[in-house]
Image: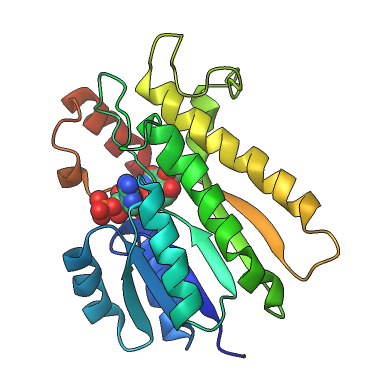
Length: 223
Ligand SMILES: NC(=O)c1ccc[n+]([C@@H]2O[C@H](COP(=O)([O-])OP(=O)(O)OC[C@H]3O[C@@H](n4cnc5c(N)ncnc54)[C@H](OP(=O)(O)O)[C@@H]3O)[C@@H](O)[C@H]2O)c1
């Protein structure tokens, strides 16, 4: 199989790291695009020589621009983008904003991967087999009537719910993937979205999550 260059957003833990280990083990060049350089380097040591690290904070527009500029300067090509990172902090009790003034979850989980993908599209289209993989969540089932509130996706006017913000961003990822796949007809690039079931989380990363929610997450995973 021809070696591909794969960008994975946040590959220092969880699903992103597992994917990075598998792809690097198969001989592909994997870019661990992470906001925390120390964690990225730690993961790179485990993943091995087919991986490299780059800084990317998806809550900052300037970081996405700097990262995609670096990719164009240094990598020479990209075959696969896996938009894995997500702001998952369900312990939030109130709305937070990014430095650019966007609601944090909406920006990090939806606008940022869309912007990142768009800024790498020229390289994906130039690849003989470009792939865009977005990550959504099976947990959307707990909000069966949820829609993306296109008039107020950042909760400027209606009351904030962190759960709705998170699942709305994951629903938007599905809708964006469908839109992208139509836009990409006639190219060699495909866009797919994976609805992830519950996968073991490092709950130590979320110290402020209420105990009932930790127990619930754990039960879902063990069940
Ligand atoms: N685990 C599940 O049960 C489950 C279920 C459904 C869907 N998913 C989805 O699967 C994907 C991977 O989740 P996971 O379980 O592997 O979780 P995880 O290990 O907690 O990974 C989430 C990653 O996103 C990163 N992140 C958060 N905010 C970021 C930002 N502003 N910029 C860059 N990175 C940021 C975190 O970075 P730091 O390392 O710096 O904190 C973390 O490494 C996510 O899209 C999640 O929504 C997971």
